[in-house]
Image 1 (cartoon, rainbow, N blue to C red):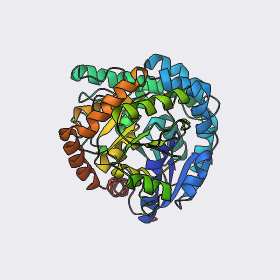
Image 2: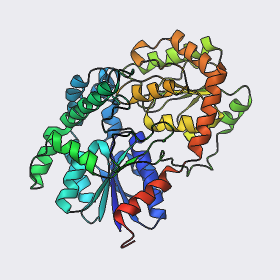
Image 3: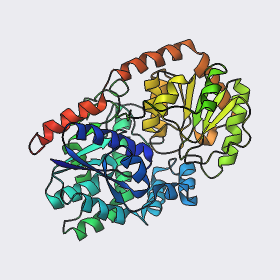
Image 4: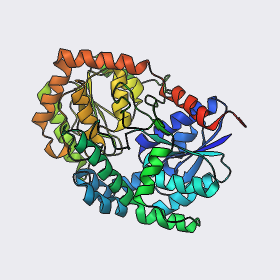
Length: 422
């Protein structure tokens, strides 16, 4: 059986799909991962068949529109509709056409849930089954507020459910004109928000996050399977540079700080703030530059600057991790068993920050708009000295390390697709 996986976005969106693709291939399926062309080397280095989607995601995120969205796009869901449409308009139709081409000879499609409307159109046109992946919850529930909803404090079940319905409406509006143009070209009738919602509830869905963080809500259908996070562990033999190894051995475990592609329009200012916070906290630091272009020129002797390193290797060697709160980075930090400090910028990041705080795995998240050196220094001090946070982080790390999300997911895929034509 040949399965095409369809993913787009940042590395945090692509990596879990790659991890699942590798595990499906090991189970005997023929797997192809359709993803933006700028991830070609990353995917092919892991031995997974790759189909390039047109559109440079890194270029979109680093554009002025992309950086502005990182700073302001998540604060107002209605405003995010126009911001997202503007960002994706140059590439989304080409990506959808390429994803369709990647599925022409497939027996099944596995799609990121946020692109469900495009995935459903492809599956419908080609008469193949579809399964969704979601690194962050999509379906409305009374159990917690919707990720990307501005208010993450507990206002009760009705608020939580309504926030979920509202955010599904926003996501649908991000893509609506493009989806229906795509469906028209495939000879399919137009989609509606109601159909988008029904498809999410009716399609088998792999929740790629830990059940210790998010238990299956009672108002979700049985077609939602919370498997555990999808980790990519093929870099277990990665070796640090002599300089990094020497830095780690020269003192107490440092604090990791990295914001991926979320540095905003002024990465130099953010770099200065981070370095000032480390100085005020009295901690050593490892600074990851990432897509956001954090500027390391002013780093002191107690800070080591990295272009990249596997989180699975680096995080267990840290005293705490400070990051933007992307789903994948959050899962890696928790698996490492160290306290987490989240500085959310947009979309689902405030949600993960709120979960971390609610479970006692880190201090109160600091929204990027309210970030100061003093606040970040205080949060770092709390993370590395609070014995309860440290103990809970250690316990959750052990629980997450005992899970095997990709193996669980393969069993579920086999249940829905069967063993025929392996």
